[in-house]
Structures are given as structure tokens and as C-alpha cells.
Length: 403
Image 1 (spheres, rainbow, N blue to C red):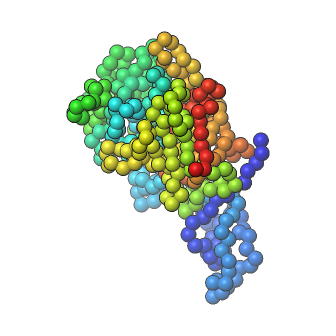
Image 2: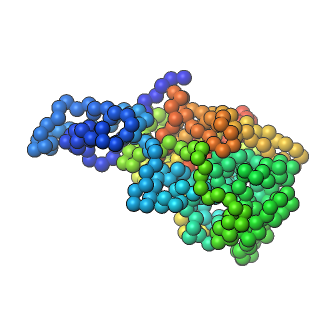
């Protein structure tokens, strides 16, 4: 293992006088650790400040000046645990919902995906993928969906975010006992295997000709609130809540300038069918340097949200390699989302190889580290996590690079 420099570039104009002022205030509640003195030749009087040279880049450690630490409330808003961006305190401190959403061609387009702070994608039987949208900003939505059935590895991932898990159906032999545990907050339609259903949270939406009944069921937000109240779930995160990501602070970009670049990311290869889960509809992400976002494509076209007709975009994309097994003749799959495994984080057009770890139980999320063992600094915004089947037969289809 070798140590790579993490280069973090501050945006905006910083003149020497401002730097000196920030140093003088270091003892006035800026943070718990002292602020390192910037490497400048001299501090000049204010009237000569135009003659100083602004340092364009600085090598920094993970501290109050570069990453979001303890959240603070400012004018009724907080920085989200899911995205790092400012939202109302009431949403930032509330459990999100984690909604199971189909991702195959007959289900398109989905509704509400653009509101998700995190999307978790993993293979299911039939060797396609299914999505789990983790959403904290949903109050003004009428619905989210369509909604599909549960698999146990999605339940475990949802619990890591302390989310209220929403599904319509389940793989009974592998999910029934798990999903009905009292400590797991589940809002599910009334189907076999669900012991405490919440039908008030679901409804059918007419989508016109060509849509099978299974792709017309939606989570209705008004009904969701009614169900959570009736089930007596606590909307607040508990005292042991662990944020999933370490985010760059406001005005800071996590650059990883020395790392490999990749503007195209293919979790299942570019062409030709394969059984990795990503090999049927060939999803991929395209990085745009102008806005620092990854644009999602699938099945040969932009993947859009029916809510606003816009293409799905993300600040970060993650490949999370997980041990997988085929369970039975129905091709039900199992993935181990506890323990550790390889990971690749894509942010700012760069590739950060490393590993993920999750050793502290169901109610903590996986954390991501670079090759030197430092926690990866994510850029503020939404994150898409691809569960990659950690088997040479399937991981060989993963591609990324500069095109």
C-alpha cells in the first residue's frame, strides 16, 4: 500500500490579509484543532495586499477547514448527512425513507429518483439490477415509485442509514424474519410474509397501455406519514447514528489531483450481454467537468426522472465489491454487505481505489477508505452506489477510464 497526496482546492478568492485574520481567530471557536499557518512568504499591510500571490492549492489533512464536522444549525438549516448540502433542520435530523424501485425496461421511467440523496443499486434474480432510493426531501411529493419487492441485502443497507424501509413484496424465505423484526422500521404493502402491513401508504397509478400491474404500485407520501404515525415509529435518528460519508466543507472541492482520471464509468461493461447484473441494460455514468457531475445513462439513453423530465446526476459514484452467492433454483441472490471489501470511489473525475468497512452492526453504514487507509472525502451532493459482484467471472466486466 502506498500513500497518495490528497489535494483539496479552495474556491473563491483568498487574499493574504484574510488568511492572517482567520489565523488570529483560530482560538475563537473555529474548531478543536489549530489551523496550520499557510505557506506564504510574508504578511503585508492591507494597503499592499494586491501585490501578494494567492496560493492556488494546498495539501491539507482532514480537519475543520476542509471537511464537514459537527453539524450546526444556521437560520433553521443544517448540512445533510446524506449529501452535505444545506436543508431544513427538520429534514436533516429526520430518518430518510428507503424505497425499493424497479430498474428494468418495462418499469421506466421511475418517479422521484432525483430526490434521493443516495441510490443503492444491486443485482437481483434474472441478472438485472434493482434500486433503493434513500430520500430525505420528500414532503412535497405526491408519490415515489413504482415500488417493488425486498431482498435482504437491501434491508441491511437501509438499516445502515437508519431509514424507514418501504417495499411492496419480498423474497419470503430470505426476508420474512428479518423485515419483521421490531427494531427495523418497515412500511410495506399487505402481502404474504409481512406481519404488520401498511396498505394506507400505497396506491395504484394508471400509466396507460403497456405497463404491467406490477409497475403501477407507488408509495403515496400522505399515506406514508399516516402509516408511520400508526406504527409508532420514531422519525428522529437515534443517539448512535453514524453519518455515511465524510464530505468536503463549503467552498472546498475534494480533488485527488494526483489520482487517475476517468470520465466514463461502466459497472457492467459497454456491450454484450453478461450475468453480472449490469450486463443487460448496460448502465453507465459520464462525468462532466463543467459542473463536476456524473450523468446516468441506461439502455442506450439518458436515465430520467418522470417527476421533472431531467437526467439523473450525481456528485459521487461508488463501486462497492461484495461477496455474492446464488441461493436457489429461482436465482435468488445473496450479497454480504457487512465486513469489508474493495471499493472504488469516483468523484471530481478522479478514481480513488481502496476498501469499504462495516463492522459495527446493522445500524451503521459502510465507510469508504483510500489505499492509505484515510477515509475518502466525498464532494457535496448525491451519491450512487453500485454493488459489484465480487467474483472474477463478473468483476471483469467493470470498465472505467478517460474517453
